[in-house]
Image (cartoon, rainbow, N blue to C red; front, side, top):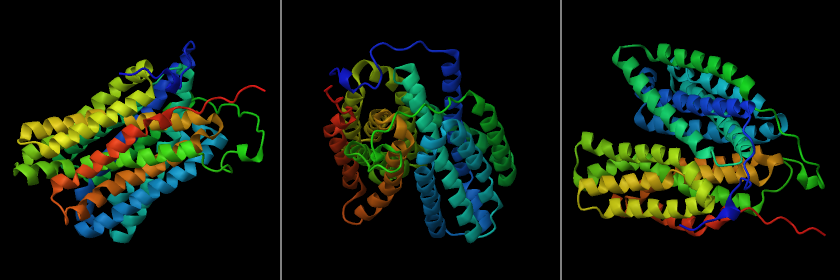
Length: 404
């Protein structure tokens, strides 16, 4: 594997890690876990909320688009706000709003109320997503080495814990409003407890031109490319979330219990890979992580499509998750480090387009299956991975201008 020291965001000599920075890292970890847990609890209770409101599957599908629209709006709103006021203010506000809003779908009595609840939940989730990723970049800058992927792994772990807790609550017959209400209260309390440990806003650099004011400058071409890569790679994640189980069922006529292992293999490999990626990025650089991760992901999905049997297909989905695991965190990190004064705005651009990609992935594959079988349709994410591997040098920061 090639060494790409020029692409590392950290300086060669890492600074001493202070107690304040350690507390900030722990608080950021808590924010990612909180976000994963809150959204996971909502997902677990979707069937119950659907039954309470009496909406059909089709109507629910349209209403879920409001969740995505709210998230996108929250991301674009929170980015410049974080640059102006700092993550210490915006992260707790986003965490509090996201936590409080998770109980609203359980209180909705019809489609209109559910749509409003999902819009607000999505907005809070989007605000928290961008603010906590921006703060994670600030923590990473203080550590002087990659730590971003571990935060994203904790988000996944939070979702797993929510699935377990939600299943236990539903099995015990607890009403959704009670479980989600407890989640809301716990999230609000945790947001307040974590807030003091977050880092204050970094001093802004001296502006040399009107374009240097955050929010007024045009989007740099490098940020546009990072956002495009986030769209493609998170499209791949969305495809795995919604189509991996169906792939095993349709291609091998696998029973539901076996087909579910496809997503389980993908999600497990994704989480484990993110726990290991930071050390790999510190040694090889983010360009190599993205390039070879995308190659591994594309090869894994191609293997799943061409697999002659279920075990081989499961191995392919596992490789797909392992390859993708470290890619998106590198994009968020690069966007945040590109310009410390506009870190929030840049992260919001990359995260926002990436989130649209995650929503678009499942929607694109569906119409394709009218033209070709599901297996060949899954070659579209393979092509996305191939493009990401070729475009990996976009992670390299622009060279510093020569001194006059």
